[in-house]
Amino acid sequence: MAPSSKADKKAAVDAAAWMFNVVTSVGIIIVNKALMATYGFSFATTLTGLHFATTTLMTAVLRWLGYIQASHLPFLELLKFVLFANFSIVGMNVSLMWNSVGFYQIAKLSMIPVSCLLEVVLDKIQYSRDTKLSIAVVLLGVGVCTVTDVSVNGKGFIAAFIAVWSTSLQQYYVHYLQRKYSLSSFNLLGHTAPAQAGTLLLIGPFLDYWLTNKRVDTYDYNAASVIFIILSCTIAVGTNLSQFICIGRFTAVSFQVLGHMKTILVLIMGFFFFGKEGLNLHVVVGMIIAVFGMIWYGNASSKPSGKERRSHSLPMSKQQKHMSETAEHDGNV
Image (cartoon, rainbow, N blue to C red; front, side, top):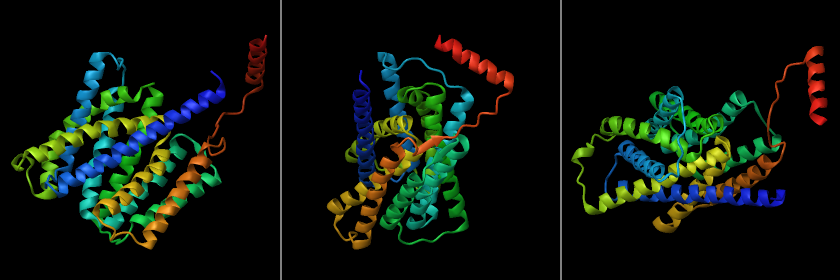
C-alpha cells in the first residue's frame, strides 16, 4: 500500500474514532441529565458501576464469539489502573458537590497541564512552542465559556486535587498499558471493566447515600426511568470503548485537548434544547477561541517537531562505538 493511502486510511480511522467518542459522550450527558433531572435518579457512582457491568457483559460476549483474543495484564498493573480510575470517578463526584461549578470547571481544565507534565516526566516528551501556545488558547477559550462563579474551600480543593491527578493518571495509564502489553482497546476493557464494575457497585450505593442522603434501593423505579437507565448503560459501552480507542491511538493530552469539543457541543445543544438564556457574547467568543485553539493544536501536534521524545542515550566508549560501527557495516553487506 502506498504511503499516501496509508496516511489517508489512518486519518479516516482517527476521524471516525473521534466522532464515535464525541457522539457517545454527548449522548450519555444528555441521557444522564434527563435521568437525573427529570426522573430524580441521582445515584451517579452506582450508575457508573452499572455502565461498567454492561461493558463487562459486552466484552464477555465478544470474547465468546472470538472477537477478543486471550491477553495478559499483570495484577499489580490492573490494581493501579482500577485505583486511579475509581478515585477519578469518586473524586469528580465529590468535587462537584463540595465546590462551586466555576472551580469544578477550572479543576477539569487543569487536567490538561497535569497530563502534559506526566508525558514530560514519564515519557520524556518535549512540546514545541506552537503546541504549548495552542493548548493555552484552548484552556482560555473553554475557561471563558464555562467558568462563572469561582469559590473554593479546603475540603473541596483536596477533592478536586485528587480528582485531577487520578483522572490524568488513569488516562495516561490507558495509553501506557496498551503500548507496553500490546493490548487492543477491547482487550484492555476486558481486563479493567469487571474490576471497576465490582468495586463501584460495592461502594457506589454507600457513596451515593453519603452524597445525596438517598438510598438507591428505595428509589421509585418505573418503566420510563428503567428505560433511561438501560439507554445510559448501552451508550456507556460506546463511551468507554471510544475513550480507550482514542487514547490508545493518540495520547491522554490530545484526548483532553480535543475532547473539549464535547464541552462546546453540549453548550450549543443546551442552547437549542433548553433555551438561549445562557447564550451571550462572552460564551460565543469563548467557543470561537476554543475551536481555533483545537484546530491549531491538531495542526501543531501533527508536525514532526510538535511532540518529540527526548533521547537520553549515554555517550559510548571507544569499544562500544567500534562494535556499533562494525554491526552497522555488517548489516549493510
